Length: 115
Length: 112
Image (spheres, each protein chain N blue to C red):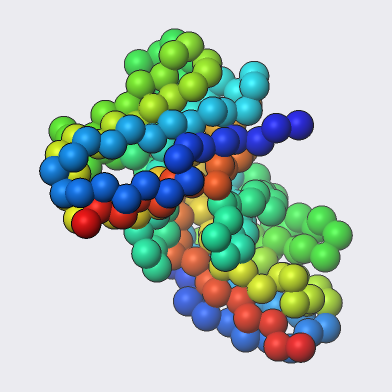
């Protein structure tokens, strides 16, 4: 079955870059996503990348996709204390099981930003 | 515009009772999803609605779980005879296309 793996914790200093990594197993995934969850809040869609792309940049966020290795990363430039949250990687798309677009999530990476 | 809303935000119930959770999707979004997030875990897919098509119920963990959706509006998730292992945050998401999913704040369910 599908599986999405992420490291559980990452700690960086304010102003440095953060890189959160994710590996997935379902090669038929059409889209790969990054969601942010702040304490006590719901999930916020940060960005997503279509599976035929290698890179997507959106302001301080850069997503890199290595489809051959099934590896996805999220880079946050100039990390701020407000970036402290749990970041979830997810895969999904039109080819997900049972004809629906259900997403398969990793367990999340808790990013701590040290002032 | 208004996002996905869910109610109640918190629910404490006794083991064996039934609970009903509500989700109001973003207006115009045809797809609606329910997920469950246990403490320290990622999200588990429960059920998916798309327009008037038959729902995808493949993620429901047992027959105590059911969900309904009226057209392209409100959805309710019902858990009958709640058990302690049902304690989790239940998240609803809606989507205009199926792929971009926008999540509500969730309902935190605690079964005592």
